[in-house]
Length: 99
Image (cartoon, rainbow, N blue to C red; front, top):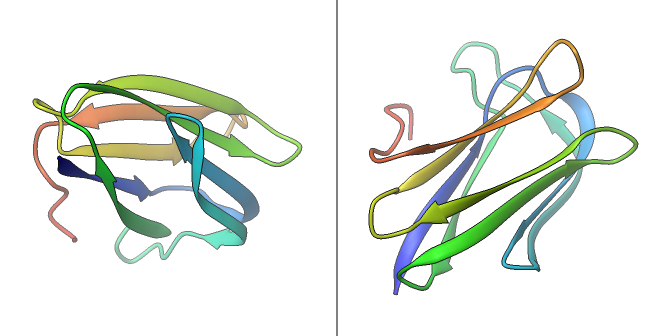
């Protein structure tokens, strides 16, 4: 068993965000705001099993994206909301420096 850090980063401006790991909701926040000084809105550590897990992020009334993560390789999932109202989810083998 390990821990996966999920970091909601750039361009969140009060959106209602839901994050699920393998179908279990781990975050349901009605107002996510990015702190521009550090490019971080919210971070959470989620206990996960070793192996592949699916991380899904959705913005109410907006985009929804998911990604499969190998938790034996990746330590974090970095999430950005881009100007075109799309979500970008990417795995990282290292923890972000601001955390």
